[in-house]
Length: 293
Picture (tube, rainbow, N blue to C red):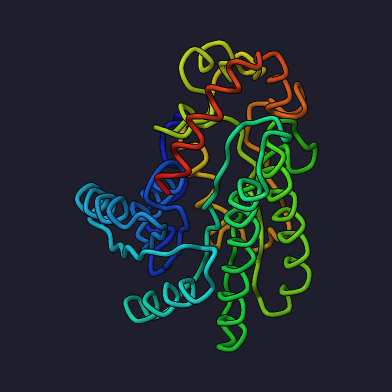
């Protein structure tokens, strides 16, 4: 058995339907694929419907599983309610929510506008508590058990320079996770979180660390195990926490980072070595990305 292989028994997610925000790409896609392989159904939601539809088609072909793609901006509560409604119409019930949607960029804080700060915090924190509130109310009203799994970061508890909006948003999600785990346990609703280290995804790391920065600040060099994470590793952990195997795990935040945060603290604090001219280039690139929506 290798860490690149699935760890749960076949059928471990049979008849379970999981909503995954940010499920069209990256870690959300990888986790969703594994849930499908385990016999579950998934609903993937994000703002980019073309990406969602492409992913849904690919995952259906790769796994033969049942998947629903629904466009949703997690910053808008009524769109979240629509995702839940469409999920129940298609699959009958929602059994779990993976709050995975996020936004981030690196920048000295003094270079950020209040709108840039809002753009990250609104997706990370507001999107998570909006989805949690909508799904939680739905489960409570129907006296149905459920499980939340939130994706945070290790700098949610240490803080980190140069990603201050993300650190603030993820710290809020961490508090939300632990608070709801206590308050909603009486409704048989569990709430847990995963704090991943570097799990490179196509596009995400190149946007955060473009060009020569990707090699100069190679995250593998900061990790005691001297490698980055494999997507199957986090998919294994996520599927376990969303399954009935973890029925007594509640309010837990599990770090999966090869020992990185223990060695280094704030993940992006080392970026103080980047010269001002490089920040100018990164700021221009971020402005172009923001303008594209």
